[in-house]
Length: 136
Image (cartoon, rainbow, N blue to C red; front, side, top):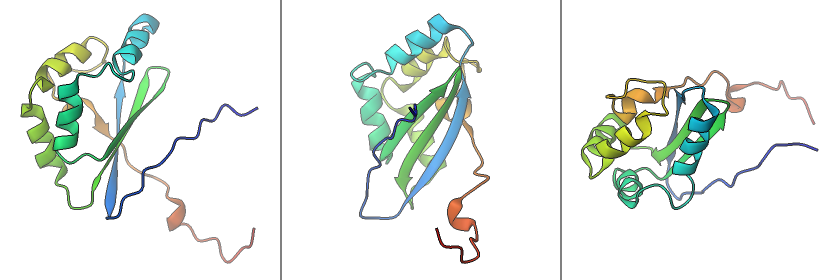
C-alpha cells in the first residue's frame, strides 16, 4: 500500500505563480515534534496568518522529511515577492514569531523568514518535456 498522501489544490480565476523554498531544522526529534505542534491547525498565531494573507499570499504549505522542510507559496502572478516579504517582516508579531521559531531552525536566529527560507530551483517540469507523440 502506498504511503503517498494526496493534497487538494486550490483553483483561482486569475494567473498565479508558485515559489518553493527550503529550510533545515535542527536534527533533534523532540524539537521537530515541538515544531510540528506549533504549526498544527489552530496553533499558528492569528496575527501571523492574517499577515501572510495581507501581503497577497494565496496558499502556503510546508512539507517535512526528516529535518528538511519544503514550503510552497502560491501568489498572484503580478505580486512583487521582495516587496511582499519586506512588508511581512514589519507586520504585528512577525518578528516575535521568527524568534519563537528560531530555536528549531538550523539558521541564523536573527535572520528574517525570507532569509532563512532558501529558494529552490525547479530542475524538471513535465510541461517542458517532449513525448515525441507517444501514446499512453
